[in-house]
Image (cartoon, rainbow, N blue to C red):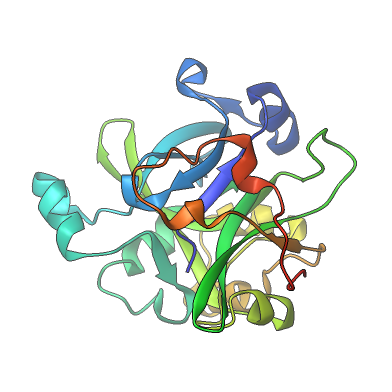
Length: 240
């Protein structure tokens, strides 16, 4: 699962990192916590326009749901798409073949269950390149166009590796953060199903991740968690 993300960098920093320009720069605002169930915008790069960044509502909407998006989202949770069934799912298989995208982030949140209590952890790639100490990366994603230049998207998840099996220790899943060597391939046209499955299997980044516990406000209703404190470490016996 990956239902909460962060993207705290300035527009100029993002554009320089991914070699693409935002199509609606005035609409972008950095965020410390984006809750997927609010269906707000992620920033994506599409296969057919790799030099542009588009806003896309988080929560993939299939063609048959476009006429009533609210009803579709009440029935289906499409924030994530499982890599193992991506090419066989009636929901995702068409987009998996010709509407893949990169989803830009600099962190995400996963629960670690300790004694029956879910403790949210902030996951990030450490770096000295940025002031906040975390790097910009991209999730493998799929998207659909619901009207002209309006998009929805889903983050692809896969079985957790050794590190994320400790962090997300109940469901043992992780979002598919693409290694830089596979980014261009993910966006390339004409991949067959065998090549896509191979990419899904081996595409996870080789760069180091770290995770630390954060405030359980993340799980509380009625609290504005889009603030700097939500990514800061709190005292805990578990540090990764």
